[in-house]
Length: 129
Image (cartoon, rainbow, N blue to C red):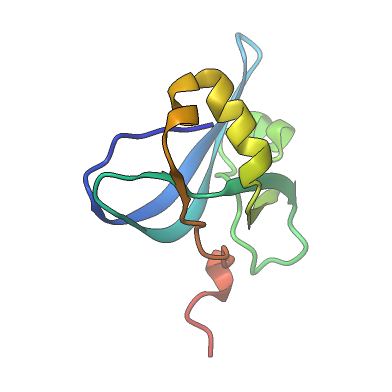
């Protein structure tokens, strides 16, 4: 669950960082490129959707790695060096709103608009005809 106070306007959610850390044993990081654009209307509370993010083994060399190969041991053990992210944008409004309301009870008194983010396109598949 993420919440932000934003001015109205067009926003691009560029990406996210992921960290895998076991203190004094392993520290690895990865990056997932999103490039998801949304429009925030004035004086509204908006639900943008549910992101289901999975780190999986790459199936092809053309797939973008989730992280660098160095430091080799840490990045390999975490799966970031040999893996890639799969991301699905879902509309789980009813389910997610229950969680949001338990965290922010005031949401029961206002209208929350659904502004679901667009479908995620793998970085290596963008700009293809």
